Amino acid sequence: MMALLTPGDPAHDKARRLLTSELIAWFTTVAADGTPHAVPVWFLWHDEAVWVLTRHDSVKARHVKHGSRALVHLNTQGRFGADVVVLTGSAEILEQSAAEWITPVRDTWEAKYAEGIEDFGMPADTILEEFSAVIRMQPEKLLTW
Image 1 (cartoon, rainbow, N blue to C red):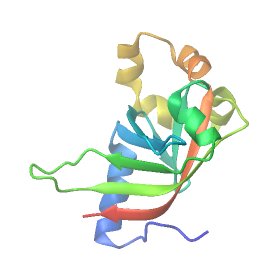
Image 2 (cartoon, rainbow, N blue to C red; image 1 turned 60 degrees about the vertical axis):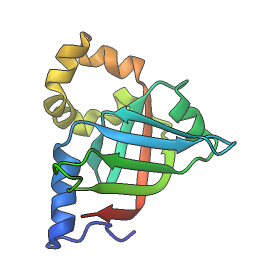
Image 3 (cartoon, rainbow, N blue to C red; image 1 turned 90 degrees about the vertical axis):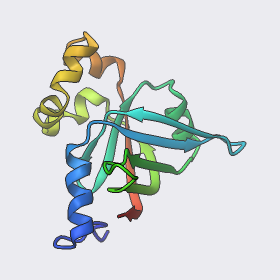
Image 4 (tube, one colour; image 1 turned 120 degrees about the horizontal axis):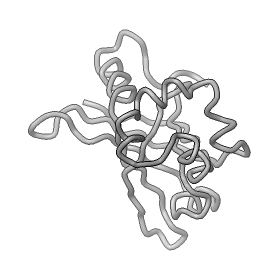
């Protein structure tokens, strides 16, 4: 698959920087009746995909299991709505648990969310047990400015 973000393209470089540094993304799925469901999530941008840990019984996990496509967007950074990053694409639940999947990126995840893990009041291992489902959102379309 061709990379969605072209290196050297200023808008894509900015999007990559924001996808790497922002702590919260809005993850949107759709129910069978067409009702959208949008929630803030912790996420990693890794291997040109958005990775989200969640509970197996969460609404977003149920929607993904039933074939919902996904939309991920970051909060705008500019005072008047600039620095927009919106990704749309397919989503899947991995067969691996979060504890298994995270091994190669654990240091990155823990560094990114160190304050959040502390604020959450749970050790990282407990978070990985509770939020053990891994959603891989493969972006197919990017909207950025």
